[in-house]
Length: 269
Image 1 (cartoon, rainbow, N blue to C red):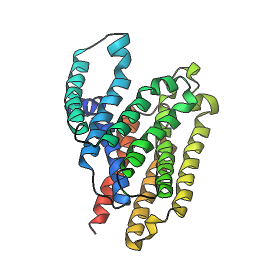
Image 2: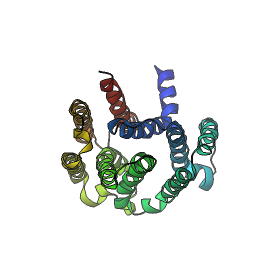
Image 3: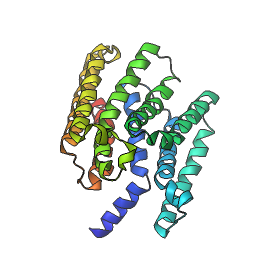
């Protein structure tokens, strides 16, 4: 059991789990809109997320404090393979996709600056997630701008709701000077904010036409979205500042994975 937890910790701390979650959000976009998997972009997104999240997480240890432990060296070894994978698939993308990924990377790199404005950071993360998992892949296909805007807006809303448990869990670790949302409006109101963005997500769903072109597929997609929304509601409701780290870093981050797997399963029926 102890060894299993060690492997789980390493899997989480090396950012593989968050990379898989972001990959699944991209896959959800493609499945819901009946688009083919863009393997080069999808792989680039997975490896890039692993790299970016690791850099942001361990920047102080690597650059500021320069405390490179044996454990951190192992994580860096995993990320060296992620770097190779990212470069390999990045070079296989077309020119415009490369530039869009570079822009996404810049948005990630300036995140530490926005993190100083604690109330903004949750929305910045959602914006980047929507950009990379909705906007960029849709630019490679013939897709109406209005539909693209709807898809991006919906992803922003559900990503923001999904971020609420992380925001609350980090409350006891974030300095009060950061003025994160829990510091400014309290934990309870942050939870209400998460519920509000889920309601907004469903309001946007009512006005998006592509889901209703094929009624059987629309029913399957909406059914999975209801399940995902319920999982997010339960996550928000049950999160406290004293929750174990696995609640957010594993279970909540697994929701996009459940979402993608659910769509894959229903598509086969």
